[in-house]
Length: 179
Image 1: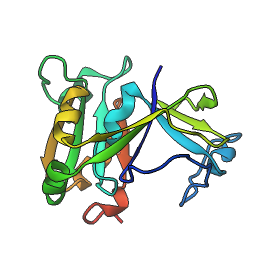
Image 2 (image 1 turned 30 degrees about the vertical axis):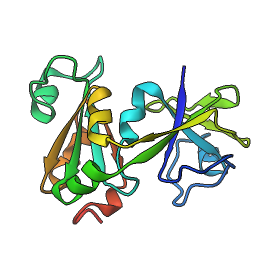
Image 3 (image 1 turned 60 degrees about the horizontal axis):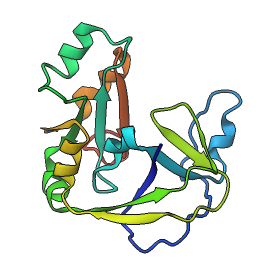
């Protein structure tokens, strides 16, 4: 297993646990996830972070309980090998094409899985094993078996959370009209 953290800063020599900026409502017994932690994502879910940091996006993918109707409604017929669809607003396309991001790889020993879309957390300081600059985000997204779709607005996608697909929304506060 490989764990990563993505940042626009390529000069970080250690990651110190910190609290989330906006505490989220957590399931009973998981309130501790708002406490100081270092967050990481597994290799299978890194597609969620192959964007400029503040870029609002919704990424959807099917799982074993996903219905054919939901797959067709939200994802359509996908080319062979494509596992997920990422949606961004047209206003972010140029920043996605020209942007870059740094992918830090972490040692796995201090991390625990939180059973949520490949996310792991550590309660202790983490020193990365290495750092790689990803300069071509569209290519990296394609390499992660994800199709990029550009839309005028992410608002029509709100209903995807009521489907049988898995949906992940990141930085939606930056989406046009989302707030």
